[in-house]
Amino acid sequence: MADFPLPNFSTDLSGQVALITGTTSGLGRRFALVLAKAGADVIVTGRREERLAELANEIEALGVKCLPLRLDMTDTESILSVVQQAEAALGTVTILVNNAGIPDAQRAHKMSLGLIDSVFDTNLRGPYVLSCEVARRLIDQKKPGRMVNISSIGAFNYSGQGAALYSITKAGVNRMTEALAVEWARFGINVNGIAPGAFSSEMMDGMLERMGDISQHFPRKRIGDPAQMDSTLLYLVSPSSDFVTGTVIKIDDGQGPR
Image (tube, rainbow, N blue to C red; front, side, top):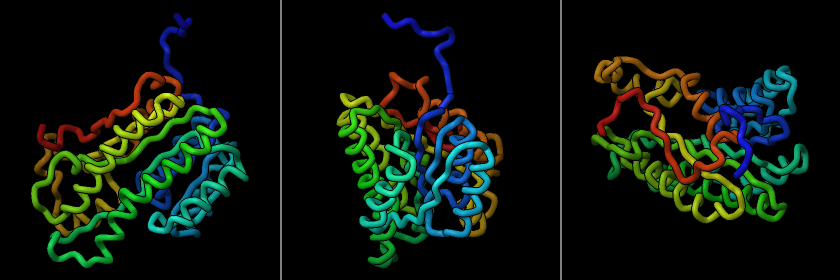
């Protein structure tokens, strides 16, 4: 038996290289800062380059390295290029957070084919391609890794409010998490997910504008703050979760049905 410390818990990410998608606002921005504060070197990605540069300066002030890279999750070449650039600059990516995602905000039968493709590519195909590219390099170099896929409580429940494809793709993210965890367990790569409820973000701001204050229907009548996900994220990317893979953790404050 291994001689584990008491308690066996650490969030020290020194020596780790983390790549986070969708870091120009909201949850992704917070995730990048949290992992940097825990000691990881960080690759921040997204499409708004000015925001990426600002975030990189903020992260480097924490005493770690940061590489801002433009990334389009609907473009395969962009995905592969980002992983290559990240590895060349900071070393092998050992932590991946698939956070980038977009809502559909339309009834299924009214969506254009272009929007359908964009939602599928951003929410599901892109994360799958990125995960496989990161895993391939970890396996080649015989290194362990941690992946966290950001799903949604909407993957488990859909009430017909006009986001059917979002729900479908996030359910796909959950299954991707489970399947890839099995695929890569033998290589020391843990794949888990987080399914947030209603948290403050640009996406949530848009929903509140369309639907009003939905928080009044929740048991605690509140919207989550991204900071309330810090501990779960750190647990899933740290040595503390060594025996946890293929799990999707709901963080929804009891908002959704069970």
